[in-house]
Amino acid sequence: MIVAFRLLCLLVLSSWAGGLAHAQKEPYRPADTEEEFLRRYQERIKKDRLNGVYIPKNLDEAIEQLYKWTDDAQRRRIRAWPEDSVCIRLHGSLGQKMIFEWSFYEGSRLSHYLRSAGVTFPDDMADFLLLAFHRHLNSRNIEVRQLATHFKEKRRQEWQERLRKREVIYREVRRRPHPDSLPFNSDAAPEASPQKRTATKGQ
Image 1: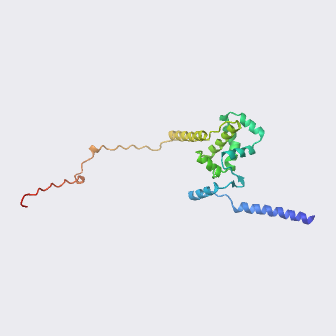
Image 2: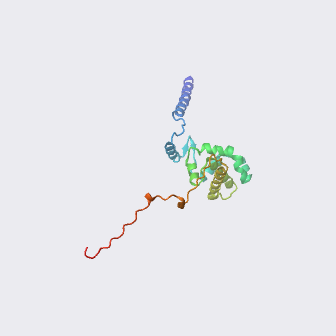
Image 3: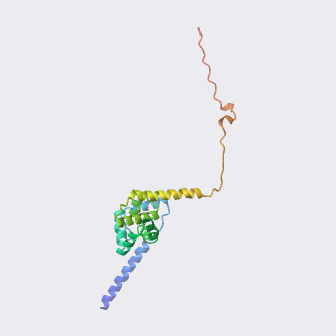
């Protein structure tokens, strides 16, 4: 009995030590260069698991995973909300869970799928999936292209608004002189073409 207990303790300790060593072996370190980030990104988007978490490969699988993350009562509440309040209510909870679990910042096959649809910001990716999930729960057509266009237009308008409100540090106006007002430089004038010599009879 004592021997069995000791063996069990040794097994637990070795398992814990192995997990600790693995965790210390591969600590997360942000990429130092753009080339390293792109190399890592290309590796990440091919994997079906990142940090031990299954990564959906498309919208259908993402919705399937959201079913697993929610229970019947939660889904009934979400279905009853108006669409324009879904992102406000869920972005800080279910939305953040998607962003970090599915590696939207670092890159994953799901974030790459959404990026190819035109949704490029991690927060927009989460909101896109929340709205798609809400429409699915209400048996509505998700309209992927229209939804992606909505987020692209939203970002474009935000960018234009930032440009409009930005502070001008320095402004310089230069007037281009009219060509007729430039001084004539005789040195730069083209040479006159030589006159043709007329051959005379007897030459």
